[in-house]
Amino acid sequence: MIENSPLYHRFLSEQFARLGYKSVITDSRQSALAQLHHGSYQLICMNMYFEGGNAIELVKEIRRDDPSVVVIMLTSDKSRTLRSHALRAGVTEVIYKSGHKSVSRQIARCLKHGRHAHLSGSKVMYVEDSVTQATMNIRILEGMGLEVTHFRTAEAAMDSFSRSDFDLVITDVLLKGEASGLTLLRHIRSLPGIGRRIPVLTITGYDDAARRQELFRAGTSDYITKPVLKEELVIRVTNLISNKLLADKVEGQQAELYDMAVRDHLTGCYNRHGFSELAGIYLKQAQTRPDSMSFLLLDLDLFKQVNDSFGHNVGDKVLSAVGKLLVSECRSDDLVARYGGEEFVVLLPHCGKKAAMKTARRLRKKTESLCPAGIRITTSIGVTRVPKRCSPDLEKMLKAADQAVYRAKKKGRNRVRYCPYSDKPEETTLSAESALTSETRSSEHAQDT
Image (cartoon, rainbow, N blue to C red; front, side):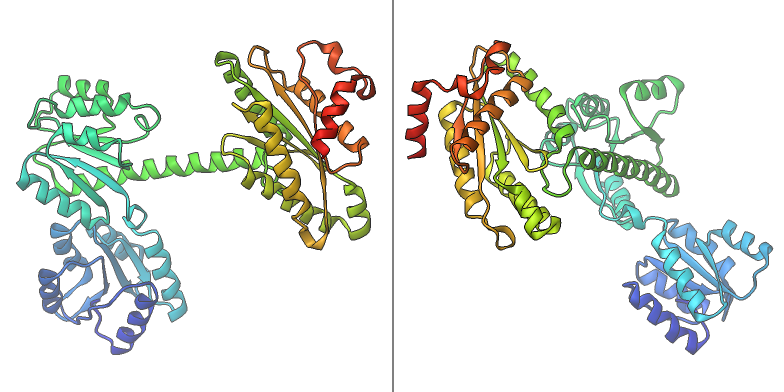
């Protein structure tokens, strides 16, 4: 901080301390240069005029050594000419002295949108076999707040992609070892998923048209020629990582919006739309790899009485508790959804009848002991299983499980019942009563016991 006024010393020190900066105070050009010579700084804040010079002349000297540091100039002169001269000379932002509150807001806004603040913590893979060149460029990159992982060969760099995630790859074209920078570039672009998202900056000693075309055909995002200029490296790295971070943010927002569209906000389970969409994927996979698949339909018993007696707010607490219970008790591959009202469904891939019945009984007991909002609740659960040789159909599974729930309700609720799945439409449309054979009744009695 280069400032003549002791009052502004105190004021600015307090402002920067709030923003996490430790201030070093000087009041002249000579002492400022001495401090800059002996240390590295993230931010320089200077008055327009000080002993031995002015901000515009000093910033030109600063930029020759450090083009990336944030430089703030404080002035009471609001002329456009002065502002234009300052920005052209290399000042990051001009802040006008128009009251302490205004200066404080301007400083905070400037640092929030600082030149490299948004890059801090981004991971860079740097592949360079020259120790001298690598040391120099790593110092520049780390000065931007980047985390740099250095490799001397393309082989070592390619191996690391299975263990780390990077925001940028910088590689020389000519490297020691059998693989070149072009080999590394082609390897990255061949990786599924991440290969197309990671920007790659290639460094080359050749600047002819044929080499540029070769690099872009291989998939480079940008290139830079030797000798590498500090200012150019900083600009290209900033642009590439900024674009990557923006793309990641958009992708994250899209994923969040999709999750909001397919999730039930009350229970955390999938909603009916999300379940139908994901179940379709599960069913297609089951057709290509035949395996047992089971299905549960859970209906909370006498739930209307909960809403009527205690109100919908309590009813919502009950639904939320049951939804969280189902998600926590089911496998990560199971598909759990609130299908409507007080009904929940669970699709269990790679699950036979015995395992499905065991899961259903466990869920029934867990629900009975849940007591959300101090209310004892129970659930009737219908189970069906799609045999290995049958083609699974969601509508038929729902019908079979619904018949099983009907039987559970008729038997007194808080029970688990099983109904066979059939590919024949007429069998699933039979009344529940006619489907109850004597054999089925005796097995149900054994299950109740």
